[in-house]
Image 1 (cartoon, rainbow, N blue to C red):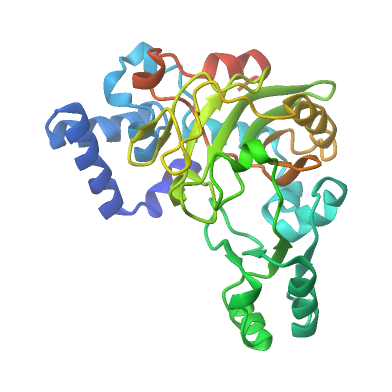
Image 2 (image 1 turned 90 degrees about the horizontal axis):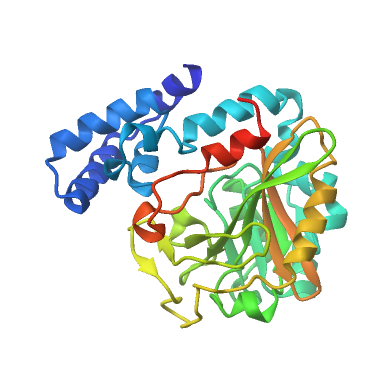
Length: 330
């Protein structure tokens, strides 16, 4: 209930109504019916209005809806298993980079301790860099900086610090196969794991792609498709926040259906190691890049978002809740 009322307090009514309009058009149903159903699903299934649209809840009956992992149900796992005292090691990107330094595969500096001269030397050494808020979520506030665009480095340092973009990282050189999906962003995996104290279980693997922007996040113009978590192969098309469906990437033409993530076995090996480092946070959504020298960790999310395929793409109206409940008692 705390989670529900917390989300209710931060509800953007304009966005809620805009999504309802889109769903009403997609489903060919009156908006008042969709609005009423959205409210019911938020209460009965803990589904946010974006869950409702993304997972096409308007097309599901009650029994089918109960099989989906929604934002609220994912949060119930976080509350039960991820200990509050250790969450900062994931929510603070600088703390995360410090704890997981051997697995990052890139250099970084913290502008709260690095001087303008340190920033100038860092950019001179690494070329293109990424500036990030130390506590941002969903790709918000992340953008790339090219050396030619730096200008006066003291002004850049001041601007980044004023906007809370304290973390500056060297850009990841990704495997050519991953770069072929979208050249402007690092195209990553979101792999959700649960560590039961003995075994690291891979619950879900997702392939995320940018579409002209600096990041591949779904809420920032990117798209995603769910992978076979054992093989790293994409059996389905990808989709974006506007419900556009792509069997091939619209910018590069790279085929998405059937795409095989390179070095996926190495990804599973890496996650089996890193998921044990903070056992007090057993439920994590890991963002993984495939670098030219192998997989590396971008970040870990103790309150990972929910990713599931649209029923209209897969032909299946059953969500991932049964799979999660095979491993997690919640």
